[in-house]
Length: 259
Image 1 (spheres, rainbow, N blue to C red):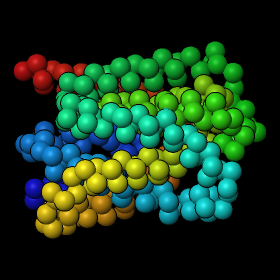
Image 2 (image 1 turned 45 degrees about the vertical axis):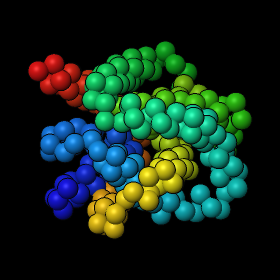
Image 3 (image 1 turned 60 degrees about the horizontal axis):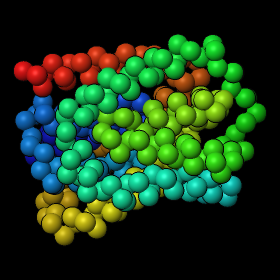
């Protein structure tokens, strides 16, 4: 990997981590377009640089994350299903799912259709409760959101997209559930990165750690802007544009793979 590759991956990660379009799929699309093989290091690189985007969340929401015990507790509860599923399926995820372009293409396509279906039926779904906050969610609701997020172990599903749709079904305001998806990513990606380093960290060289660091910093800086933009966007817009985008990218990937 060159410095250009590293910076490019960092920008892609920062742009896509919190949008409902799957950062993992876009990192793999970038890898394919750049002609970089899906080695074990590349898979670890793609996992660990996501911490850069997560650090942006910690910085922007540090007061809510550390000063509200109830909010922090609810994040931990919602993380439980993801933590269990990620731990149990780590080997399957790393060997069979990550880098599997066919799985990613189908997940992007199906996910796009689900987003469009959901958004076009919004008028049939009760309006969000403007008074309900994340602190008010019950344990079953939190575990349901966590289980929805766990679907993102399938590359292309989109962690933020799954959490958003689930939260909207629960009648949470768009900005409330979007913000919660940001914060729920903190323990999720910390755990994923820590476990991956535990499993493969000793095999990563000093040069490779430097490459990871550059990608980490780049994704952090880009994510700072994306987070602020998305919170304002969801207040007045639907997710239709992301649904159509996923469908187009999924179809293009399938056509490319068929060739």
